[in-house]
Image 1 (cartoon, one colour):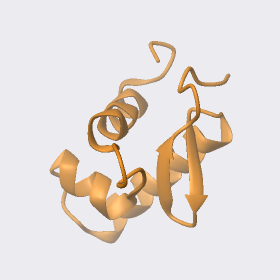
Image 2 (cartoon, one colour):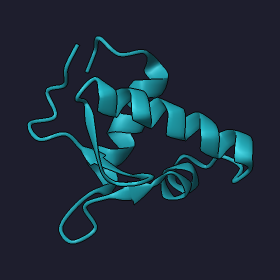
Image 3 (cartoon, helix red, strand yellow):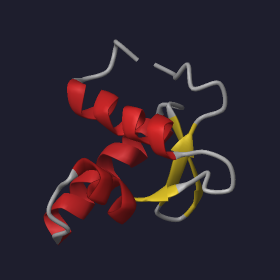
Image 4 (cartoon, one colour):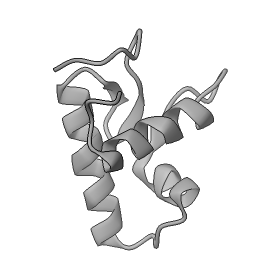
Length: 78
C-alpha cells in the first residue's frame, strides 16, 4: 500500500477498518461519512473516481455498482 498516494491509502485504510462480517462493502457516501467529508456531489464523485481507479488496479473490488470492498488478498495491483 506504500506505493499509493496518501489519498488512496486513506481510502483503503477506511475500507480495512470498516469492512467486516456481513457489512463487507461500502458505498461512496458511507466512505465519505467515515472520513468526515461534506456529503456534497463533488466529494462523492471524488471518492467514486478514486475507488474506481483502485478497483481498476486490483486494490479494491466493486461487487455492485457504487459499492466497494477490499480486493481479495488486498496486496494490490500495479
